[in-house]
Amino acid sequence: MNVCVLYSGGKDSNLALLKAFDEMNVSCLVSLKPRSEESVLFHYPNIDLVYLQAKALNLPLIVERCEDDEYSSLKALKSALEIAKEKYGIEGVVSGAIKSVYQATRFQRICDELNLWCFNPLWLRDEISILREIVEKDFDVIFTRVAGLSRDFLGRKIDIEIVDELEKIKNYVNPAGEGGEFETFVLNMPLFKKRIKILESKIIGNYFDATLIIERAELV
Amino acid sequence: MITVVSTCKYRLSEEEFVRPIVDIVKREGYECEIINYRNFKPKGNGIVICGTAIKDLDYMNYLEGFEALKDFCGKVLGICAGFNIIAKIFSNEIVENKKIGIYEFKVIEDNPLIKKGNWKAYFLQKFSLKNINDNLECLALHKDEVCMFKVKGRDFYCVSFYPEVLNGEIIVNFLRQIS
Image (cartoon, rainbow over all chains, first blue to last red; front, top):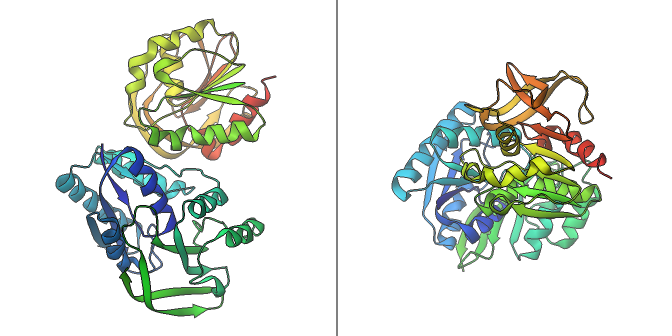
């Protein structure tokens, strides 16, 4: 089956992509570019860098812009999936949704309207097990946004020490970051043909609500 | 030992519909075996028949294999596709009626899995059951649809929604009844 992957460039969409790759023919990636980090549905920081990730994956990428509200986000998603259906003959959509019933419901409804299969291979996964899996599978993932965690996490690679650290505070901070506590960016994973090297970056925000903006990066 | 039945045509869907059930079964301390709907044979002390993607109807081509459940003396929990399978093998008609998202339902009869009253659940269903025959007992309703039933004279319980999302106690209480 030809499928597209809803791709934000973070750890969850990359792990969902890896799982889909084993069984399906991943024909393209679909990314939504919201106006700001206030987006109700989509990942925001460094979304422009998905072009580089798509190149590293050697996969076509469809990007649709949207406002931050639900109506605009869903309209853009539907439009992107219609393009994917027409251009790449997709029959299914893969997402990295974990626990958000709000997000899953909306993805399922759009897939249903477009007569597409919907796959959520990380659905209801224990968050710590996801972090452990990306470490075991040699993903190179860094924190790009924190809201509740300290800004010292920004730019740090997710390794086993960080997973242990997040496990200790999991009652206070969702260790998958799905509640917006943090967002991540994948520099390398098993399907990348080249890895991403950050050449220039800056941190904006305050101590407990900050974003790492990657200003320049290249494939090496 | 609990048998967890996959009704998924694709392995990728099993990550979404089977693995969460297996996680609960293991967390509750039970051993489990996963079997596929294409070669279903009842075994173990209890059986959980999981759901599948809303577009996935392949399991409907294998209903004959599930007829063996009629001779099974253990406990069964059917979830969505499992609800459809058990409704059908006990000669009930399901009708196309899609429902995606969180909806309220009302438990109207005492049962060991969930208390009477109003609850919310996550539905991802293509079919619903409006009328039931004498083989089944309605335990809960969403509007005029049966969303939870019991097979009379058996410990077979079925829900049309996904209890693992918002109503995990249904699965836990089902498992705790199994010795």
